[in-house]
Every structure is written in structure tokens, then in C-alpha cells.
Length: 280
Image 1: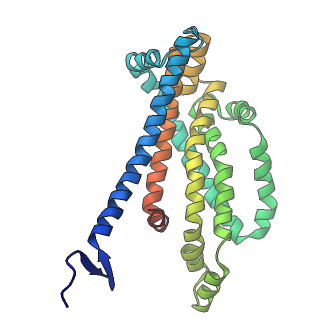
Image 2 (image 1 turned 180 degrees about the vertical axis):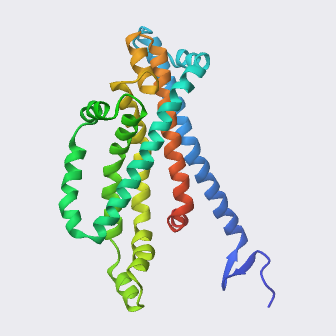
């Protein structure tokens, strides 16, 4: 019997090449849609912003036009980047420190339920304290350098990662645990191959949140006491009624936060491969 030229055999199944081509084209269209829709939404918001400022004759010191903000981004790019650098360092260091502490404590909790029962309520109580209340205390304790800003960023990252990591390590399939015990797996092997693998989606969900909140923590810390950084520049622009610079500074901080979020998402796609394959 002659084989169909439009079909191939793959893994014991007959695959229609035309159908496969249609599937790949649909997948590419979906990918472009995911990329273009956010860009279109941003452009629409900028147009509406410009229209609102012009139509309602809003004064520049209240709300500048997007073009005025863009001019400041170009003209004062060096100043914006010089102030972004310390904020970025504080946010990244706080992100690493806070998440490392959360992962370490979650690991201790999963191995010792008494420790979880004793210290988890304390972590909840610390998390309920507003960031603006923690910041002055940390400035008094650690000085007026980068240290208190890093500590604030770390604290704001800590609790979401702790909660998600504890849940990920504990919420495992009992049958998988039983199978590992039947196979005489050691506690270390059970932890690494079952609990850690199960916790990765939970962990990266928290890390993506922490990527954004760490920048917020660093900026709030700079509001309390700093002469440089995105937070300090926001305060200076506000007191000087330099609204275009204020909006440009906020745009730079938000862009960095979004890029940080994107980097964590990219790492997740390479680490949690089974989740990426299932989503694709």
C-alpha cells in the first residue's frame, strides 16, 4: 500500500503535515498576540493620558503630557540612571537575602513541625507591621547607607516566599512519598526529588511577586533617609514641583521592576520545564 505523502509516522502515530503546519501557525499567532496586546494597551493608555491632559487643560505641574515625560527621560537620562543604580543594587540584594532566608526557614519548618508552630506566628506578626513603620527602625539600627534599604527589601520579600515555599514542600502527593519509602529512599533523596521538585512552581510564583516588591521596599527605604536613588529623586522632584521629572522617575523605577519580573519569569521557564511544556 502506497504511503500518503502528506503524512509521516512519529512515535507510532500518523501525523498529517498540513495539520501540523496549521497548529504551528496558530501557535505563532497566539505568541504574537500575547506580545502585541500589552504593547497596544500601553499605546492606548498613553494616547488617553495625552488626550485627558489636553482636553481638560490640566496644568503641567499637576500632570504633564507623555511627550513632556519622554523629553525628560532623554534630557536627564544620566541623572535617572545614576539614581537607578543604587536602587537596583538594594532591590536585588534584598531580593536575594530575603528569599534565601525564607527558603532556609521553610526547609527547617518542613523538617521540624515544632519550629513551624513556634516561629510561623512570629513571621506573620512581623509581616503585619507596615513597611513605613519598619523603615525608621531599620534606619536607626543600621545607619543611613544601603544596609537599611536592603533590609527593608529583604523583609518585604520574605513572607510571601516563606508561605509559598512551606506549602510547596508540604503539599506533596502521599503516594509519591510512599513509593519513595518502598524504594528505600533516604530522607535527603525524598526531600530533593519529591519535596523540592514539587515546591518549584510555588517558589517561582513567590519570586515573581518578590521581584516587584523588592523594588518597592528599596524605594520606601530611600524615602526615609537617602540622598540618592529612585526614592530620593521622587522626593526631590515632588518638593521642587518638577512633575515631568517625577513621572519620569516613576517610569524608570516601574520599568526596572517589570524587567526584574521578566528575568525571574525567564528563569522559571528554564527551571520548571514540565510546567512550561504543559502551558505551551
